[in-house]
Amino acid sequence: MPGMWWVVGVVVLAAIFSAYLGWTAQRVERLHARARSAERALDAHLLRRAAAAAVVAEQAESVELYAAARLALDADPGERETAENDLTRQLQKVVLDPADPAARTLVATSRRVVLARQVHTDQVRDAQNARRRVVVRLLRLARRYPRPEYFDIVEPVLPELPPAPLPAQAV
Amino acid sequence: MRIGIVSPYSFDVPGGVQNHIMDLAEALLGLGHVVSVLAPADDDAELPDYLVPAGRAVALPYNGSVARIAFGPVSTARVRRWLKHGEFDVLHVHEPFSPSLSFLAVVSARGPVVATFHTAMTRSRALSGLQPFLQPVAEKITARIAVSELARKVQVEHLGGGAVEIPNGVAVAKFASASPLPGWPGQGGTLGFLGRFTEPRKGFPLLRTAYVSLARERPGLRLLVAGPGDRDELYDDIPADLHDRVEFLGLVSEADKARMLRSVDVYVAPNTGGESFGMILTEAMAAGATIAASDLDAFRRVLDGGRAGALFPNGDQAALTRLLGDLLDDPARRAALSSCARQVVGTFDWPSVANRVLEVYATAIEATDGRVFDDEWS
Image 1 (cartoon, chains in turn purple, orange):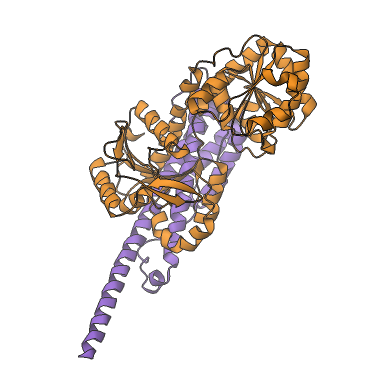
Image 2 (tube, chains in turn purple, green; image 1 turned 45 degrees about the vertical axis):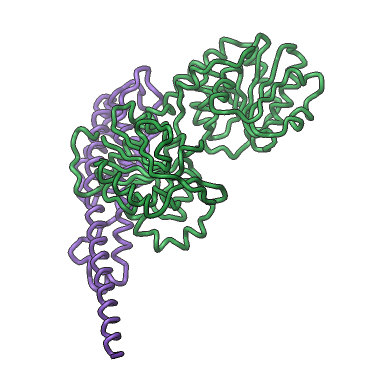
């Protein structure tokens, strides 16, 4: 019966398609979970950087830097990017003493912010690309997850300190 | 931390990627981590303890050269077994987009994956064509490292996704402890150059001219040259009466490179461009040589703005000759520069490079769900 083959074909195609759907749904979930974890990690490292900056500001008695660090620590989500950019600008103006452990901590935490932001940006991009796929949009596979957003700040990089006479352990 | 590292290329043949992996693995072990390296190799080959063989490698032309790699069902099974028994906190693959163990490992793994890109791959057109198929694989990589600015650019432009630049480390101890070649550097002073002297951007003609004019006033001054190239071509441009004061070593092994760098009073890097990092300078610094280098950005950065080596204006023949003369006449200045260089080169030593890599591992672990972040990992 030639009609049978037609049915078998449809069943096989449907099986392949549903496997693809399952795989895509899993992929969407994984990418969103990662973007969330990356965001939490970035948040934690930004807080650590602001705290390290406050310590350096107290030692150097720099009112401006201390204020920028406080603002970054207390900023509302909407103002966070601006506050972090201000802090980066203040930090790049400060002359750090290579022998000061607080300064070394600050440089190390800044390095971790750069890494965390890079990974966060990558994860957000992957998640957003996945959301744009036709299957994902048509079947609204991403409806349970909030859309991850980029954290748009200037590269918060600080110049590396030359090695101290007794180098502090990195991180 | 338990770290699993995958090498795409066999350790039977020496190569830049293999050396990098070995040095990194040993530095991580030295910092107290548990490291397992999976690489194509025969089961009965002589291997370091941390290396797990993944079966015989086959020679395959790839990316303009012949790579000895392992790929296929047997390799896949071995990769999966290694992943299952390794219980790694982080998986670190090298060159994941070559058809290799690294690719298989990324496909088979879940969790924090860090990838290092070594070469600026020229087959980017083929790669961009495969991009839609590689995307799900690329998504599994949590964090990316590029060993050079160029490798980073290729990564960003063709594969999407950023990458942190962490250059190769230098095995400082290996260079610092090498013994000079017998009879060198000698009494009259020795200048050194390492690299392809026929390549214009290496700037060898600048050094040659400077040497010839300095050698007229200093009867003992010698020149030691190492690197690929034709011996006759080197001597053709040097006056015949100076030939016995110029020694050409040809292409040297890693061990002889260290001995060569220990054999010179002043190491000269007259490069006129094209250097993105200046690996050779870090090696010369580790060997304790005094350095005279052109003031390229890359060199200026490595030499800490001129503290760890003397700089001269790029391409300035007269300035180079003057600088070399001054350095040869002033042992105290040479000693000051080289002692500062020894201190600065610590930043490029493998343990500090490994610490930077560990920071990337930590970032990858934090960004991957289902992992607990505890103190042991920091």
